[in-house]
Length: 167
Image (cartoon, rainbow, N blue to C red; front, side):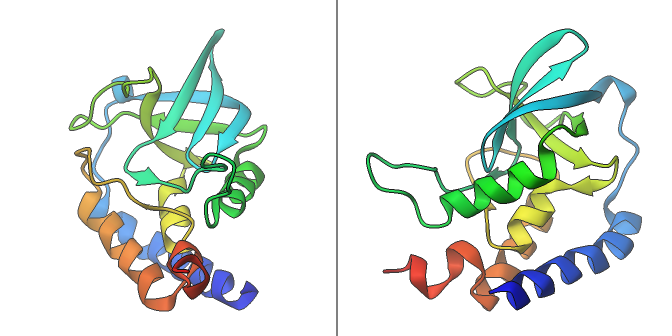
């Protein structure tokens, strides 16, 4: 399993060097904010402090397995949570609003692309390692790119796409 994660991370880092030249566009400063992560809820939701304001953030465009569905754990829910927690806990992140999506979801969470260390899109890491799937029910600029990353993980049987999750 560790070799699969290594391959996925290598792929993401390789794409991270090339894809930004083709996929980035200037993001208005009005659509960005820096925040400090205060608590990770699960693989795609966490709390931040923006200035002196506490907010809950849902990562735009992806869906990770729930930690618990009823009394049973979802396949790879715990792993997605640990992965996100290890990357996010105590970190300053850049939150980017996508003009195609809503400001907040029906639960009042901010919908944002999340950049770690100012440049790594957390969704890319979660998708390529198989800890997330593309969330089909919202519009956002990177949807086709995210679908390619999802297919990458599917073809290799990473994470939620592994045989153990199909049982």
